[in-house]
Image (cartoon, rainbow, N blue to C red; front, side, top):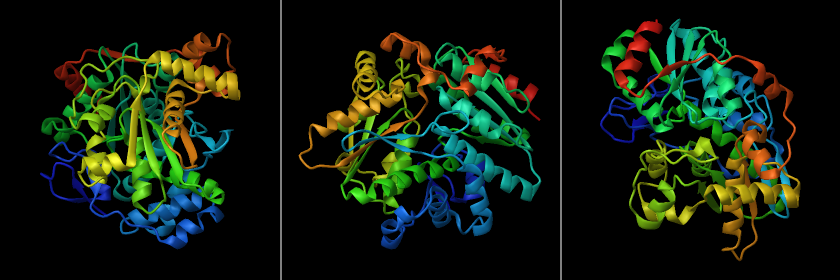
Length: 436
């Protein structure tokens, strides 16, 4: 698989170079020059395959020219070793639970696959790398867990001060070993801007092998497509058109679903449900792309992204055509009060506990359902366990939900993080002093 830059000002590269470089030199995003379509036989028989078998077939279609099948199967089996169950919430409405991995967030899929893939290539070349990653909440915990203790890799995580939940913060600041955390006095967009600037800094790149673990890295995007195909396989027997509702911030998760669709998975519609950082809903409504700076703080903090970095990928996947995008994506947004109402509705009427991000996806699906006369199977994605947002859950539901043991144990651990401003020179100095 060759990959091109969305800005088309950098040469094409192979998969190995793309995942270690993270960003092309022109500051675009890497995209496959060709997306293989899995045949009708695969999709017709998907319901007879295990999750790991589906994941391998999709990965092999994309990566067979760079990773031998036996090695790729080992990577997939190592990374995708936890389920993504579908839970029936009401008639024809299902929740795809993506929080059963180590950090209890959907980003475990991408982080674990990326860690296993990078480790595979590093063992072959006997190299070391330094990963930089910005997080608005769940990415940091998933990357920290996915790369913890992996040989030849150090990880530096940037997160916005006061804008992640207590449990999210503890997940990325208490591991130590090869994982460091930087608390940035700004927004997620500031954290992301620092990381992007570092990747484009030739002085840093010449001294250190830098790589990204954000959803801007193509190795994060590919494995997220697997659980869409698994959901399709699970609901195939119902014989209804399929609609996915995706809580959207940086838009990597939605792009992964679109990738699965481009590989042949039948989908009626994607719903991009956002909070008040409504850049994409407004783009689809007006035709104008207007980033929000600074991003708006909400209770669905992992979606507080004012300039979604994966939007150029989404644009490419729809052939750089807004009308094609409009035909396949229904987009909407909600404020905190609407989000809280949906958390309460899910619990009061369906006894289902959902985090703020999941509640937004559910609300988007229910809104879309009112516009459709045709019956369909609706799947809303649950991107994180509700217990990672306890203050919000307790305030809305007026009770204390149970906390899983693995999260409960984090609360007594001591946070270890370096505080930095949003000034790039300060960040560069820190990296120069701490990386090797």
